[in-house]
Image (cartoon, rainbow, N blue to C red; front, side, top):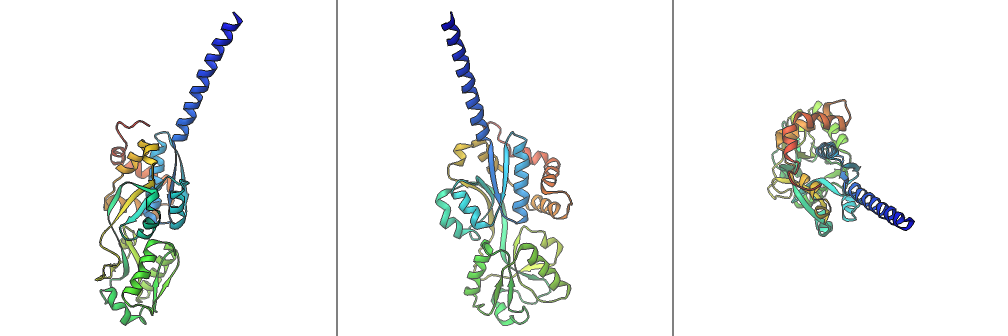
Length: 290
């Protein structure tokens, strides 16, 4: 009699341990680490993905870093997803180095552009004209953080266009924009590393300088990427990230909200999600098994 009871108890305990193990495995599967750099579109998209996934039972960690550490972290599976990979030009060097460890989940935005940007009142139209006007620009191109893809491409542009007399100034996005505003307030000539989508084109009257040598390429695409094998580990999340698609109007409205609002980023993301519920719901996999 006692033996039968012990057997029953043993079976029950084994079943409980199995269930606990499955539950633990499920919890592990539902953890996502999203890496992002200090660029407004990436900040916006990453916080939006976080609040949407949390509605579906995920525990989401956002990891802020410069671009080089992000790609290293992705390759080592320390970060799962990066929603702000600009290709084919801007982050080509990083993809050349780490591409074997990366998989593409989807194209988030298809009308991105990078290049050199000046105020509309500046009378030159092309990067090739910069060499003849370096005094007007104080021999400076105002850039952002050193590891950014646009900075690497601008180094190539300096060589391609014979702009050896120019110094590419390293700073942050906020410092670059402050320098732009200061120069424009005085009507001075200034050239910066610029990109769209960005709210600066709504706030300031700006133009891209023509790039006849195509150093900066044509239109860029923003992709969601993950470490290779991530989609097999978590097909629900992979399909979700692959489904995210934003138009210029949608992304611009989101970035403007991020820039102007006094709430923190997560609150803004929740508000934007609620105001665009039909769009956000269209990204949720219909039949994937979480």
